[in-house]
Amino acid sequence: MSFYTSLSGLKGAQTDLSVVSNNIANVGTTGFKKSRAEFGDIIAASAFQSASTPGQGTRLRGMEQQFTQGGFQTSERALDLAVSGQGFFVTHSAAAGGTTSFTRAGAFTTDGANNVVNSDGAMLQVLPVNEAGNVTASDLASTINLRIPPTNPETADGARLDNVSVDAKGLVSASYSDGSTKKLGRVAIAIVANPEGLHQIGNASWTITGRSGPATVAGAGSDGMGSIQSGALEEANVDLTEELVALIQAQRNFQANAKALDTSTQLTSIAVNLRN
Figure 1 (cartoon, rainbow, N blue to C red):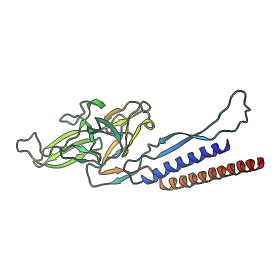
Figure 2: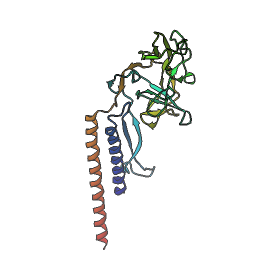
Figure 3: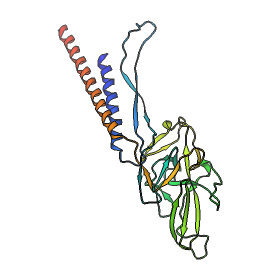
Figure 4: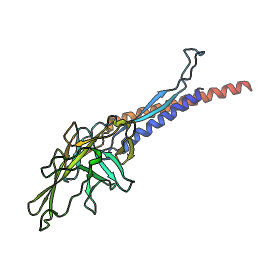
């Protein structure tokens, strides 16, 4: 029995090593959230067993992500955005069958159709606004793709795009060469009741699940949502010092379980030789 107990410990330590290594590998990934492996002990007991029955090892209960905020790295690009506070950017990918996902990675650019997209081609979602910049609808179903027209369709001379700005409340405005300004929408921010229940899909993006609960969407800087910082990107919330300490601890746990496994094997070998 001690053989399988030590084997479960080896597998647990190996999983812990993998999680810590993944955190370290993604220290430079924008919007990345570190994970932590959660373990539980294994007990097999019945009403007829002694209360002093030893455990039978460990098992992986799950890997929980830590959604604490990372630091900000300044940028010179207006479409490099960071959420200061709670919430996620909402993105929509038509190529993935109409998947709506949530992310803290705010490195956006424009595609050939002038849509604001991330590196995967998923389009940034905004809430519609009127000419005064006030939100006209504030739920997930009302979000629209943010598109920046290269010319102002409301002017007769088709003035060319001069500048794009995003304020702290997520209001996106486009300025044109004739001095006109067009308000394009307000960046949608989503929150869920249980962020740890979100399903990770890679590239610092998540989708909702039954554990996370439905997404509540509102404009940035309102209803408890985080504000927008333009010209900044959120760094990974990985502390290298903490991760290196955790790496050493996981390595020692692996070595200790390997030693226990070796001792169990030696004792079994001695017992077999005694019978011979």
